[in-house]
Image (cartoon, rainbow, N blue to C red):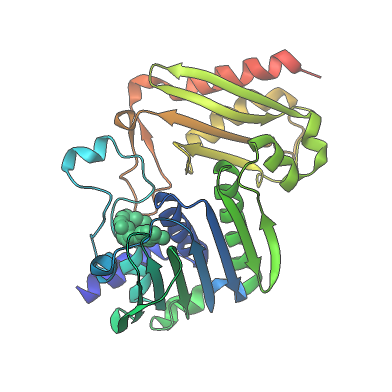
Length: 324
Ligand code: ADP
Ligand code: MG
């Protein structure tokens, strides 16, 4: 069991940023309206996530840190209707096996909350405690018990940049959630929880985008649609950092999808420049397969959908309408 946790940890805990991603996704799945993230030293030494979500009942807290316990998948057929971010029940167990982690959590229906502390997979303390509704998780000394892997992490600055990217990616697509991100005591990102994708986009990438965003809302096929924004051809950036693709609001990494979009921009892109966009594909879960890699970044579409062609065509058409 311990070995399995460590192996799984290698897949889930690639870096502090992947820990941050898993924890924020748990907060989102818990219907949080506000999520505060604080990190120190690139997340290697300290990551704290506080949410106002529905919390974990006392009797379930230790279980949540055991491998393959998930409250999100009750029957096998759920795999086909899945809409939550998590479903494998691997993240907390994996993170706990390679860090000092503590959780304070309380459900609204209970008077007291629970405090649980785990070090390298061993429960250190578990007791009742007064707490606010919601959950706070603190992860310290990531990978301290697997020094070879800890040494493999990049500089604090590089790890910190990955965390910032992850938070921005999650923050702009969950416009109804208030995010606050504090990095070494500096607030690097905060959102109001009632913004639009457009306002978040120019808050992050600059006011130049104010008149340079095209809204998209189109059907790709039945039960699958595309919504979001495209930067116009007149505002290309020097990196791909402002390209965001989601499926059912989950971050995905898909060369296929990126290629389709960039190909549509092709005739407008000067060399060394990249389009900016944030696009979410809303798909009935039966049309997609996210169960490929534990990090859930990869995704497969039902082949009959011809997503590549459809995406290319829609983006190209939108750009044609406004060609400047
Ligand atoms: P998964 O998200 O795949 O279910 P995790 O290991 O990430 O697995 O989490 C295990 C369980 O712990 C979740 O199914 C959920 O019940 C509970 N949990 C984790 N984080 C939170 C949170 N912030 N608020 C409420 N419940 C949580
Ligand atoms: Mg999870």
